[in-house]
Length: 473
Length: 77
Ligand code: HEM
Ligand code: HEM
Image 1: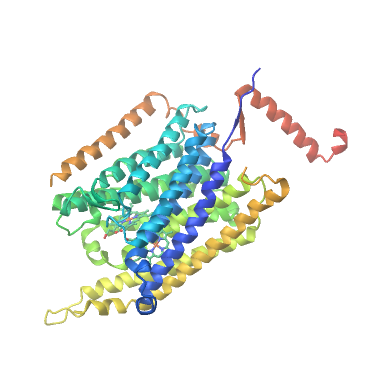
Image 2: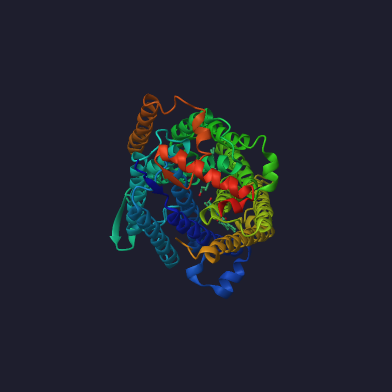
């Protein structure tokens, strides 16, 4: 009898995992700089005053680095690891895998160079200029091509829910990126959007919202459906729910974009449409969160011992909070208080630090011992990271909710004679300084946690190196 | 607001692609069984061998493991 041996490609997973840690540290450090700039503007303007690191350039560098470099590489790490195992086959083409890896890193490097130099399309989360947009489209298609081909040559008939999430991610991000990036180049590093005015805004938030939905949410739900059951060694609470929740989520998500444009010149009916779909989103979102959390019923004793599961529990809880808060923020009367304030920023980081960050950390702690066939270098360090990160999120988010609420109220405060109580916008900003300092501190703590993780995981990888000298093989 | 037509068409097209894959999944029996897929993912080995061989290989490794666990390394030597 002939034996066909299939070896999974673990090297590509290791590459993406290292990249995740590296860009995570960079992206968050840049975020910390942005946070400090808001807390100590004088210092940055008067003493440094260096335009390459001015807030307007640092901020998009932060968002691009954390979303596309940190979260992006985390997605690839988890997808390349789980897909091979779920489909019981190696990736269809190693060549495409490594083109995907190096291409993606090159795109990130080009962002790190061009954004501080001031090249920007000015569209949020799509700031990169047209040559880079094209490169992103090509890399994304290469990733999708490899994924589809791997699915076609699979050895298991059933396609597990996680893979459906990856597929939806691929299709939607591809379409939205391409449509939002229609632009007219004027020279090598400058282009203007094909659309104009409110039409451009609508396309932008159709894209922007779905960047959140299909880059920060669906792929991570896919990772959740693989890594939470694996780490708990329990099947997902309800497989049926995972199917229903997947289809409900993707059919509703694409219509919610207008909630970013409430009270704008967008036609009223389009705003209302966005609101209705945003409210509906709570059901499938919570379906996913509960499915993940309930998977752990009966193994809570394991949660106490395992840092991986603890990270997952906080990630799922943060996901539940962000998706509860999101529909509330979509209500016009609430949005009139929160829009333009730090409330939105707090909402974003409950999602970013809590859901994306913690899930990515849990996944990395799960992966490294398995990829390197050894024990984690230090369990207590991993537990320390967990507590530091959780504390960091709290210190980050609470001051920002407070700041958002205060500033929103200050803007709406009137004197008895009908004039604004705070006619000077600046007073509503300087009042927030203490909160900005606290937020920076929360961010600093969170980053220290990430550094501990990097140390712990590299030590774990080195352990195998010493044992077998097969590092990175 | 002509842009809305473009967006509606594209969004509907995406939705149609999803709908088609949903129908495909149902028709081809992807969702006939909604219990075992959740459990199956818990069993994966580092290397896959074609089905029949897997069992034999596994049994062998199990045996080896047992010998080692019993501490009777001598029997091996
Ligand atoms: C230590 C970690 C972090 C720090 C200190 C930090 C800091 C900041 C700061 C200061 C801003 C600008 C806020 C403003 O304009 O008022 C910001 C924006 C943003 N950050 Fe972070 N961040 C961190 C981590 C993350 C992570 C992990 C993610 C996502 C995965 C993320 C996603 C974003 C996004 C999407 C925005 C733009 C928000 C908006 O436009 O509404 N951040 N961050
Ligand atoms: C049911 C789910 C959700 C709904 C309905 C929702 C809704 C909203 C709303 C209404 C805003 C504020 C728009 C404004 O006033 O400008 C917003 C902002 C934002 N949300 Fe969510 N949210 C949800 C979940 C999430 C999750 C899970 C994440 C992250 C992982 C996230 C990331 C963001 C980001 C990055 C922004 C800032 C966009 C900007 O740059 O202005 N959201 N969301």
